[in-house]
Length: 340
Image 1 (tube, helix red, strand yellow):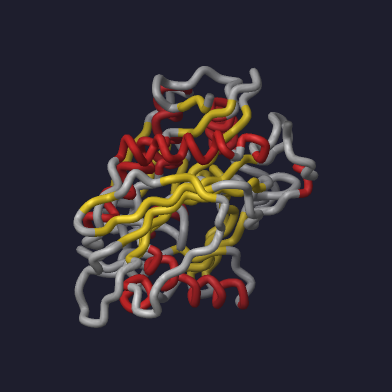
Image 2 (cartoon, helix red, strand yellow):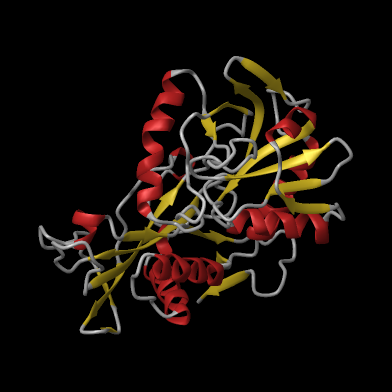
């Protein structure tokens, strides 16, 4: 039986649920892991995560489909991306097949927290890993903990997605050959000052340019860019310092295979932005956030799609992908993993 929750009033915030998954790495191997009702973490004061920020995380969702199934969306890609993050941070990889199984266990154990179809809410899963063993010299820890918790969340945008305003940021998000392509916690800590500053100046988010030349569009603090050209092509920035968004990859597939649009992943010069028809930010939380205006040190770039609603192409992309996630539209093979 579903929990007695006012699903329609949920925000995007943490609500403790009944069980979570925990596995520990010690003496060169992972244990089998287990479900627990304990939501607290106990670690030594000298834990590697506290000293040198050895941590990474993922985010994915479970949904109730139109026909009543409970599904996760492409968890295999999250598992693979966390494996890449771990390798870059000298952390032990949790086996990808067991990673997906652990996600399924967490959803199954908290099935009553999966919001009903049509509520606009979803169950958000947060897998994360951190160095739990003591480290005082600068080196990788010897012990790690991998955990997955879940929490029901409401739609990222209450009352629909209104186009947002960005500023071109003077800070660098990621350096060439750095860690911009992985989901390290430190990347997000570094973005906090910039986003607080942007909010104080009246902007919703930052547009980061490449740190080497400051002439190419990269991403925001937590989402990839997606543009629509005036001739209807869907383009997204290509860079080694961009996080490979699962939502963006899914939207590009949808654009080509479901909507028959021309798609392209390539470096996008900031000079091109003024000539784009539509712009959106894509990620797990909101799927697509439409962008209406970009301000470059006082110079306003107003997208033709305007500040009132999503542009027509981005709206089609949003409707198609959410339709797939909710089971209204047939999904490509392997995209929806059913929880039984």
